Length: 431
Image (tube, rainbow, N blue to C red; front, side, top):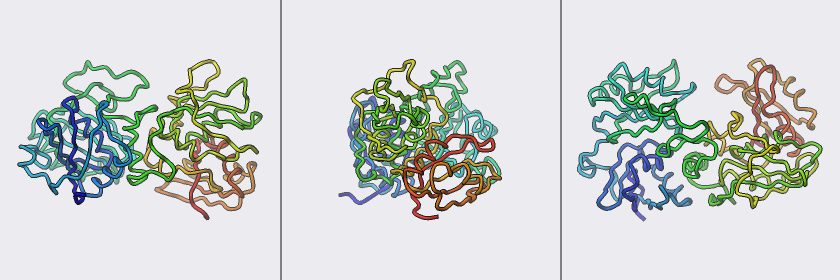
């Protein structure tokens, strides 16, 4: 085996595969500093910011076969430890270029194309901006009209914060020649072509820059999975399932409804729609965002206790649920957890535990209020309210997993003093 290097060698790169496709494959694992397409050989060389990023990428794609536009590509460490100017064939990377690759650290406020345009346009005419919300953080590609403008912007803004104390800019030169922008919206913009469509509502952004919307393809999702599990997968998870719909049976029909099922299953992925079966009132179909999320739900919820019943959770033979009068739609619900911080949400996936974690609480919440909100669901053994990054959170430990599951199912996404609270299982053993 070649010793690890931050340079990755990619083979079987067909002529239909663009630089942006390769960026999408590796961006999740860290900043890509250089990219060289060896078109004559159907190969590419790609340099990550450091060796651990490259190791994570290759470990991850050791478990899941990477493919771009239906073509399998093969990845390995390059024998080069560093791409030199000669390897790059006047490639750039660290050399000035009119396109900047910007990574934003400590992002406490949402970042849009408009905010970035405000920050970067004082230094020259910005032609195009494309943003990626990736597990490695938020990144953007910013194309100036001239290389000189990009040079000034980088030297002026590198290391600066957009807002006081947060949203720090980490700026490198990209070695792309031209950004491709298909839509003008809050994620991408071509300032030279105001007539581009804003994109169809509810559709993921252009495929070149994969966006983690509901129903996102396994690959865009691969990013967050890799970051969450450090390149591997949790024991018992194959990562190869492509069935998105789950059949749950042995439910308690007197106490269950679609929103309660949503609260439980949305811990493992985005929910598209849910259908309770009229002819079998203890059965329900749940369509998840993709096969990996469905596999997590089946794996972690099989045999879980809820409302006095042991749940049976299996893959359904139906590839999806047809929308109808008896289906509940969640595809555009802002309660879907995996549209933001997907990697963090994957990392917290586990079977139900006795301990639940509450966040997005009112700032003045007391332990007594939390206990009185939850005690109808079981015996609370211990509880604690604490502050994290200036926000109030709580841990509540029940006597058993079933009580904790009931509390989560009934109280997640409910309102407490005007705040919509969020509840997850905690893997902590004690408070």
